[in-house]
Each structure stands twice: as C-alpha cells, then as structure tokens.
Image (cartoon, rainbow, N blue to C red; front, side, top):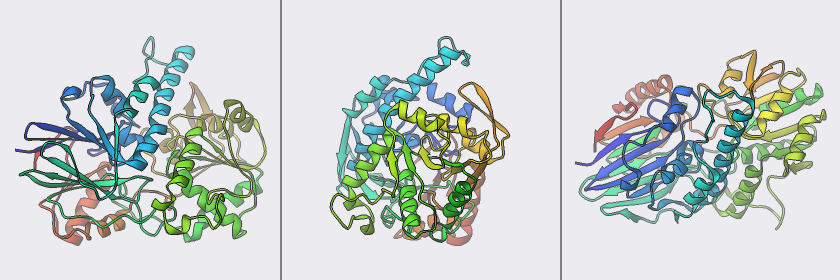
Amino acid sequence: MAQLTFLGAARTVTGSKYLFEHAGQRVLFDCGLFQGLKALRLRNWDDFPVRPDSIDAVVLTHAHLDHVGYLPRLVAQGYQGRIFCTGGTADLCRLVLPDAGRIQEEDARQANKHGYSKHHPALPLYSEADALRVLTQLQPLGYHRPFEVAPAVTVEFVPAGHLLGSAYVLARLSGAGTILFGGDLGRYRRPVLRDPADAVDADVVLVESTYGDRDHAADEGGQALAEVIRDTVRRGGKVIIPSFAVGRVEELLYWVRRLEQERQIPVVPVYVDSPMATEALRFYTARVSELDPDMRPAQKGVSVFGSVRFQTIASPQQSKALTASRQSAIIISSSGMATGGRVLHHMAAGLPDPKNTVLFVGYQAAGTRGRLLVDGAGDVRIHGRQIPVAARVVKIDSISAHADRGEILHWLGTLPRRPGRLCLVHGEPSPMDALKALVKDRLGWDAQTPAHAERIDV
C-alpha cells in the first residue's frame, strides 16, 4: 500500500514536505523550512521522522525557502541522493540556499555577541558549507519530460506560473495510480511569468490554500502602488519594501518601470539592496524564453526591469550608506516577511520616521515581523532592540504571487476529471476551511485538510 505523510504545510503555510512511500521506496516532495511562529520554527530542529539516508530521491516544486530551505539540514543529517527540479529552480537554489546558510550563521553570531538567545552558545540550524553540499546533488530536468526518480516512481514537471522554474509535479506510481503535487500555484493574467498550465489528470491532488478565503484586489494598472509612492515622495520619505529576493522583486521592478514610463509616479532612485535579488534578476533575464512574451526586450542588452534611476547595492558599506541617507527613494530589500536580511537595517532606521512607508507586497505568515506590522504593532523587535513604529505601514495584495480562491477554483476546474482525493495544503486553518467549503459548494467535491504528520493511503 502506497502512503503519503504530510510533514509540513499541513494547516500552515510553511515547511512544505510530503513523504511518499511505495514498493519499498521513499521519495520526499519538497523540503521546506518552517518559518514564522516559534512553535513552527522549533520543528526545524526536530529529528527527521525517517532516517535521511533511507530516502531514495527528493523532488522540488520551486525554490522558495518554505519549499527548499530544509535541504541543507537533510543533507547534513545523511541524505546522499539526487534532488530533482527544473533548471530554473536549480539556478535559484544556487542563490537562496548558500544565502540561507550565511544568514543562519550570522544570526547565531549576532545572538552570541549581544546575548539575546536562550542558548549558549547559539548555533545555526545549518551552515553555508552545508548548503553548498546540497548544490552538488541537484539534478535539473526539463518541463514535460517524464523521468524515473526511483524504481516505480516517475515524475513530470508542469509549469505552475509562481516563480522562475516553478512547477507542479505529476508522480506516476507503478501499480498505485498518480499524485499531483500542486506546489504553489501562480496567478493568471499577471506580468513577468506565464500563466499556470492547466491541471493534469491525477487520482490524488494536493493544492495550496494560502488565500482560500479571499480574492485579490484588482491592481488597476498598479494604481495602489503608484499612490503609495506618490504619497511617500510628497512627504520626503522612503518607500521601504521588504520583498522575497526571488520572484517578487522582478514584478515590483516591472511595475515601477511601467508607472514611470506612464508618468504616474515621480522619477526617484530605485535601489535593490539584496545581492541575491540582483543575481536572481540575471537568471530571469537569461531565461527570458520562460517568461511572458512581452518581457522580451525590444533591443538586445536592454533590461526590462531597469527604471530610470535604478541601482543595485552590492557591498555592506553601500547598504549602510543607503540606510543612513535621508533622500527620498524606493528601497527593495529582502526578506519578504522581515524575518532577516538587509531590510531589517532599513526598517530599524526608517520605522520611527512618519515620513517613510513600509510596504508589504506578499503573504505575511503568523509570527513574523511583517505580520505584526500589518496587524498594527506599535513597536517591533529588531536585532535585540524595540523599534517604535511611526512610519506608514501598507499591504498590497494585488502583487501576490499566490493564486486567490477564484484562481484556485479555476485551476481545479481544468482537471480532466474529479480526483479520487483532494487535499488542501499550504494554508492557515481559516482560509483552508473556507476553501474546503467553497470547493464543496462550487464543484461538489469533498476535500481533506490533513494535519501535521498525518499519513494517508493512496
């Protein structure tokens, strides 16, 4: 009997991991890091439920840390097999995983230096060296090319429209049917990335439910973003945008460039203060054939992401100078939920000043600084200090890379037939339960919402 165990993203939006066991084989689909609430983050330190060296293959849907960020820990604990993914995902993993290792080490150093950890000494979950070992195990595969990743288990990647290289994975199981691992589902009629491909026939389907209880606001040609920029520049402030270093930065730059060209916003300096985001831009440019057709530059060598006064920040010294500057500017820096990275320095300096705006453009998980600020916190703790919040805090959902409930229902409607089992994953309980009821009402299908560590027969 084939079995599937939900080791992450089960009634939460983080830590995606699904362990499939069949005919003596073990294949792990996604290997994400838990983020957000402390109770979730502590799971990263638990022993893996099975011996990592007993896993035959790992298959990735895309390169966001909540889907790949646990890989260095898994490899450090003994996993030696191949890690299958698309070429775009492999490219981005080469950026995000070493960076995650460096951040883990730096956070431990800062905690030890300033004494704000309960652990003595504070240790990183994994190191940059652990992350670099992972990269040697990546095995890129093309879209729509079935490949046997373990005896009796063949996978095929299908474009998901969520991130460069993102896919949902069709797993064909000898004698046990098919499973469709939805990963994160992208959006329809959005810039930069192509729309998600139609769903493919499967007996069991897993689909995300991040925004299962709402529809995204229409972006109306970027008007919400334009209003935030115009208002902040009028006040003489900075627009500080915590952003996921890969995926979100590209769409932000697309909109800033377009709004400048349409003369809807003033021309001000636009900085990307994230070495990883800068490298990701190069990968997006190199894989322009995988993007929307209108992202192809009219002239060779012209970037489709660069605004008039666009600049990338390379060194820590440049970043510190930008933090200290009082000039109006748009600053895009990681991380997207304000859990780490250079954006924390910009926020620590900028939050006490009412002229500034901190703009969130993606999902903010429970327990993150981003969620606290969006929910109206009067102060937040950054690098061991309580920082008062006087700046304007804004959240725009129209730039989200996750499908909303209408888009999820649309994608499910492209399935050739009703699946034998539908599992909702990657969502907090309230949106997940709302989507479950909506699927029943609109499609007449029953959906399951598996709990953490729950095992089902497939």
